[in-house]
Amino acid sequence: MTDTAVLLIDCPDRTGLVARVAGLLYEHGANILHADQHQDHEEGLFFMRVEWAVGPADGRSGWAFDLEKFKAAFAPLARELNMRWQLTAGGERPRVALFCSQHLHCVADLLYRWRAGELVCEIPLVISNHRNVEDMVGFYGVEFAHVPVSAATRAEAEARQLKLLAQHRIDLVVLARYMQILSPQFVEQYPARIINVHHSFLPAFTGARPYHAAHARGVKLIGATSHYATEVLDDGPIIEQDVVRISHRDQVEDLVSKGRDLERVVLSRAVRWHLERRILCYGKKTVVFD
Image (cartoon, rainbow, N blue to C red; front, side, top):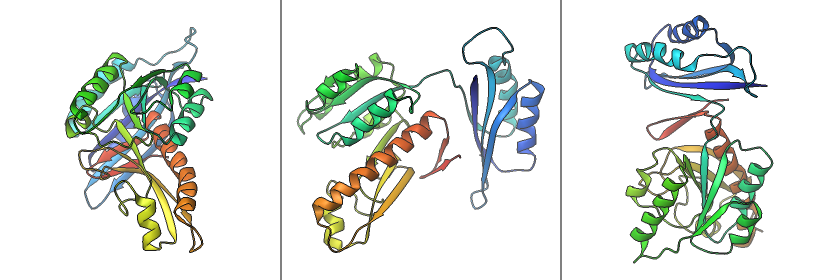
């Protein structure tokens, strides 16, 4: 087992980009484990993800890649090629906070996957505007915070939530069926670091009752969408979507039941891909690397 580093890049497209990056990694002795790239020809943009070994995962003696030395060498190249870039070490476990309301299927799924080792992160905090998740959170040994929210107390509630996130040094917020609208001021504190799940195949059927709207419209497919939250409701860059077929025989309750499975799957995938540093945002889109 080895620890790894991941480099994410986006920049204007030009010839020789892959060679320049790979060459610099070679000069510093990197053992590249995975590399992927994408070109948006209409926008003239280039995207790349490179993952390489930096040393033994157990920290024992042996070879080790000098990440700081590489970072110092890469910065001038990034400036020359007008790159936006992120360099992270795999040994750094992001700290994740889960938000939920009364529907607990998504938060239960994420906590189980985390405990099973599928999600490589720390989950020190769950926040809810209801108490019915408290016992479940306690079972996993995670701190629970009950923060009621009303129209009159929204600003006060968000201030408390942000204080809790700061105290726990949270890197990523996951809205696991949190049925409250976050203010633009809250969202701007965590740009591209708030993942939401919406119980519809966006951009269709936005809002709070999409299954009812889908049933009224008589659609033959329903879906679920995970996306980064922005100041505009249900309009952030989409990370993952999935669908299931329905028929005239299905009632609203059937749509809700079938949709729950989709919600769990698309949210857990989005969270895992974010933790694995596989996502780049640009405009209203995302590139999700294999």
